[in-house]
Picture 1 (cartoon, one colour):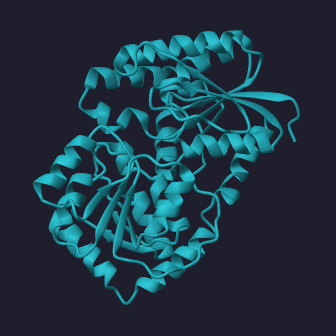
Picture 2: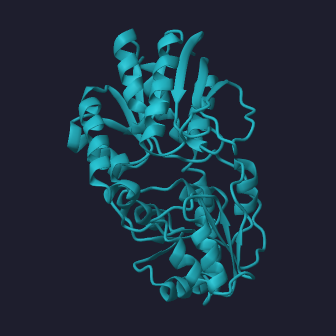
Length: 360
């Protein structure tokens, strides 16, 4: 156990809904570290009740280049005046100030890459901005000693690109017992409402589906999606419930009959994606319908937990959902989810974190 050792964990979000960061912070507390989680404050931010310290920056800018500059400067000075601590940087947008401070203070730096940052859809059509982030990544990542990421494909890509080992720490939920129940024909999508998630096609597909779609999350394209629901007169079939805390989200998810993860192949980040929601569905014992991106396809086939589609055509999606809802194989998928849930959980995955932090 690490007694009286300090860790400062930094993210650019408002700390409320990042389950990965919450689980890592709790792991560190359980290992005896004294943790401070640093993020930003937004008007929509919830009050946090967590067993570790938190710090939220009130920033002047909340989006665009000025936000990243504002955040980086705030984080730099916070870390500069903070006690000597292990630094845990989450994603490329927190890495620069963490790296500078780690050199100035000669303290360990651990890097958690939640995604293939320079290949997210928001950057692939903005070459100048993409090059800026790539230059930061190229300058810093080859000098790092302790890195981990969310999927095997992303780990391999970073290792090939920079010659640095990235350990695999998937964003798995904690193991939970779930009572198997009779369910209505309810389909759930949980996660960000952003470009590239296949949500437009999913909503359009509901014209053909005998069931209800619940969309749990918020994001940049929410208004567009709501307009689509109105356009296709699907108000009685599609329901938006907004962002939910982890407990409420799990309770809702386990009432669904199918969980969907239909990411599109928009840049390498999505191609290599292994979304949190896939494992949340498994832990809720909810069979899945996923797009044929390699990492999701691999898990779905390996554990036999649902179906894979090769097209985002709304009719294809609708037919697949109807087929699953009526399938004689449905109970077998549920049983396979139950078996997978006992393997794909945070209790098993956090052993990698123990190895990383015990080396410091």
